[in-house]
Image 1 (cartoon, rainbow, N blue to C red):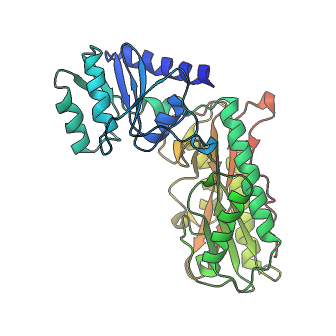
Image 2 (cartoon, helix red, strand yellow; image 1 turned 135 degrees about the vertical axis):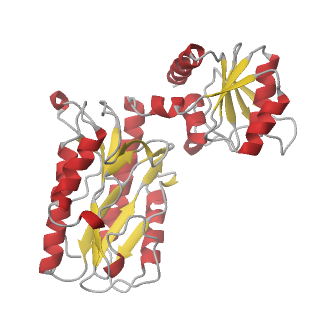
Length: 368
């Protein structure tokens, strides 16, 4: 992976040089890990005019889940605890003779930005913007492999839960059990706080589990994800508990399923982000659920669970091959509940079989 990370840094350096900044300070943890192979707590990456440095407050942990720093990088460990790696890195950039330093303004607090500026007043600070995030959008096959393994772990954890007795158990209990199962099967941990929603809570985006107990006839919607070697995937499914679904549950489920399928089928290189959103959204909109729809249909995943691209009505841009995204339409009816169906897929050209589905748990409406 050393060559991979070096190539990523070279691509970023080209952008910085084109913008007139011979050095760059990368502070956002996911961006540091993308470029350096690891992101110890508080670490920053300095792309210097003379050499690249991973600046951190302590030596990196030697754990696979935390990543391992690129061996071609020189580690600079702060001499005393409590220091700021970003401030130290700015001083090192100044010592290397750089006259300009690109920084991630969207990641730095005002106080930290001022501290970086004051330690090297000769340096002209420029905004690196979202340059690294843009590089991260298209994944290589090693990254996709990590997402694929994470999806397999999430599928396995969810499948095991569905085989257990659910009636009478609380949302909170089920969420904790799912997260334990993720780790048992090899995940670094959950990709985000697991959402388990029952009855009138079902179908809510980002629902925080409560002490409500599962009852017969409930919709049960679950959204979880696994982190594997830093990469995060997502899956969401909705089921009915203990009995045959009611007519309104079947109708609503079939509608959301149709919307999700339309979104999945529109994933292809060159497809506009907003057109993927529109494909799913218009199915629900035409059935009269415009007011109940979430702000977006899906988003990118990777080292963070919510990355570019955003599949939303006003999103600008087009999909490339090898971009992993979620497609997750849903409808929540206040007081009754609702349905969410969520998959992680990788955009592939039609010649390669079209979008690759990573999360394969059945989307059939099961009565558990």
